[in-house]
Length: 191
Picture 1: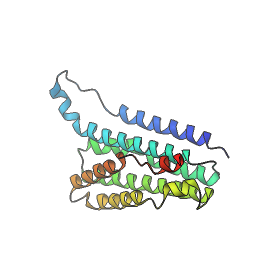
Picture 2: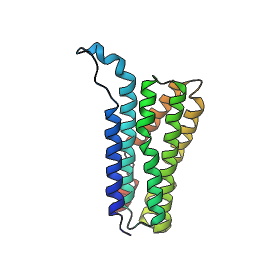
Picture 3: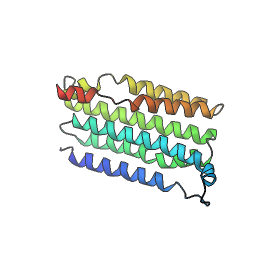
Picture 4: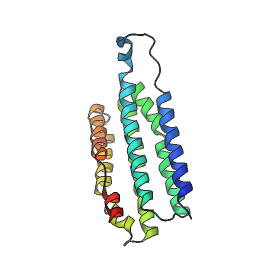
């Protein structure tokens, strides 16, 4: 099966998710800089989530560049990933609206963990479909960064109730880890 429809559909869904997130940002009632101050929690949670969605889109794009074909299991694994990504607007808005209260921060971490797990599952199914000696398998490798990220999400969820700001710092740390471009796939494809 061709991968073209999967790529196009995923790009569209991620674009819609980003659009929904920005619609949650409300226009301030005033016209001065002071009227923006109450919006900072919403804007910060939006900016972090926007960066994460950009990271997912970028890595999904690279993953599919090394993919020749897909099957039904891969299509469902991709839908599984998109489901968890589709919850970003909800947890992002809740986290910002609550001014980083423990339960919304924990929920944000759970969605991050499940999206990361879904991405891992998708990548493993793609590797299985293309073979252990494929370009994709060499490019993805053991995915240490993915495992470290998921472990950090578990820690962030666990510490959200006593220290939601620590959880938020962990999320930003994971985001920074992934903002450094992952060149594994580009490097292998260039060889």
